[in-house]
Figure (tube, rainbow, N blue to C red):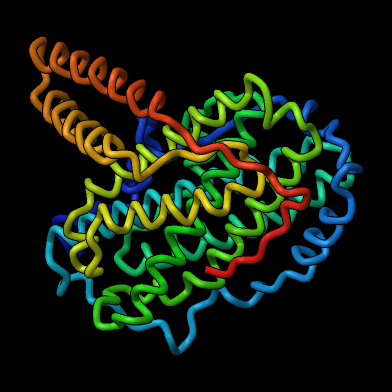
Length: 355
């Protein structure tokens, strides 16, 4: 039996990871033959440099508990913080393991040596990340059954270009989130309520290099970041940023314990991600537009209403949920059509994690 009534058991946390909603991390599948046919010749110099870095495996010994890992007393945490910490860890684990599954499958199915080597290293990194989070969960007796998750979680099919846009942004915004928390806790170590935050700096450098790889994949074909595909880039930028905003606002106790104002934190992460994405995307969202935050706040309020409707159940709850989702769609369109900033993509996409 679990020691804490508000902390789920292994079955429950695995079910949490299995959930497929608009806000939860997904598992993806794609056209692996199309990805296997990528020719990296146009970016060969940068490609070889990045692969050499990944091959050297700078974080080989990082994801292990050391004397810096403080024992955590889950029972001493505020109950709301416990629940939100578990939610954060399970969501993070699912996102990391999703990448591991996708990258491993690409490596398994492929024959292109360049692409297979890249995905071998990225699946290795994501497996370490997921395993490390799972070890942290197991301290409370609630680790996720990853093998069962692989077999039972629903998979979403995305065309390769959508994989590039979504995964590039996921890796880069993951870097921005982790490094922002890490830098904040360097200044305020008294707010570090879990030892896993100490591992974030080198960890997020893996995320950064994975984003670099997807930037290079997009640079092999100029059509991916021009013409009508710019509208798709815009879609994924809005979707990723809005999802993060709503997810973070669902964890108020978590951010309060860190000593972080959620809106300030999200805006800083958006700004960092936008600066990095100039390496490949010809546009960026205007997060300083006067309607940007009000629309995000409206989106968050709508999702709170939608969740309440689902919990209420019945015919009335069903109609209220559908109405909320319709309003969320309208709000998304308003965010989508806010003016964007144009960007001249540099000749080289090479960047280093310097934030």
